[in-house]
Length: 377
Image 1 (tube, rainbow, N blue to C red):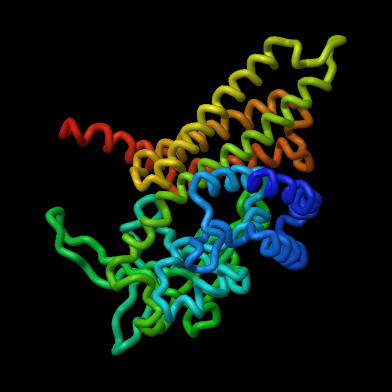
Image 2: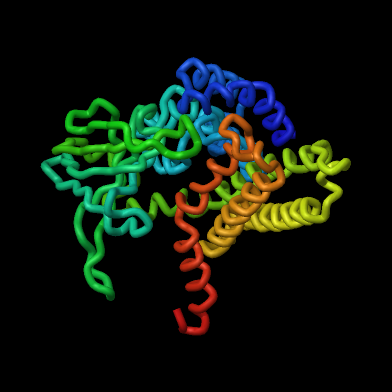
């Protein structure tokens, strides 16, 4: 029921804005506000948050089904429907009133600031530093590729606050901070223009002696990666679901095209060169869907491993690349038109193999998990 309701919502409230958003390269404030208001009314906006913080309290299988429906369009529009990072559930009671509760109510927006120019896949190499000064912390450094920071009211910022001794040597101690937009020394600037997903803008964040109180540490000092890990690993399952949704739209459009487009006196779906493509697309998509649903179910059972999430994200994102590429081929010249959905889906799909952990990182996680029992990792 939830899935079908969201599907109808997207068809009626989101698709009519796609042409405008893709042409403009951004989501106009009035479009964003209108979609968010309707999403709030229907309970989509905060459905993924636990009930005890005012959210819908849906289970992860339902969340995956919703994420699959959301995947059909640009991330610029997706973020207008279901927003807010689950990492905010780590807020203390005092922090909840300022950060978590307003996000759940749709009154504030957050952004996740981890990536830096020299720290992408190797997140432990971040160079942003925070030094203690009395009861405050002073942050200095730079972030980039930070999605939606231009719209956010505050950022969850990760910075090095010291070093820990480990059996493998010294290791950075990472802390997460809640930093409000407008704080002195915190500047947000537009980043490079992505080639897909209009409206899902990336930004550069600069911190120059930015002072925040200790009360704005999310979690505890030195536990930033522990806090992030509770959100990032399950998040990969939902990215996999998004990929399945985008692939389903591309396949559905390809089926309709193959059943109506005529060449040489018959519909192109009758040609084996096209029909076999469609068969492979459907097979791969269903395999990705069930791998994703299984990961979501394991998440609900409390048995999801890093490798489970990695396999779902790896296979679904690479499946999406193959399916959208074949969809372009099925549509021929029309598939390459920038104002036609197939070309947009193909272009938007490419980022899925990079963010939330590249395919190479996912393969590393998977291979390490299956080799470790043999003491070969």
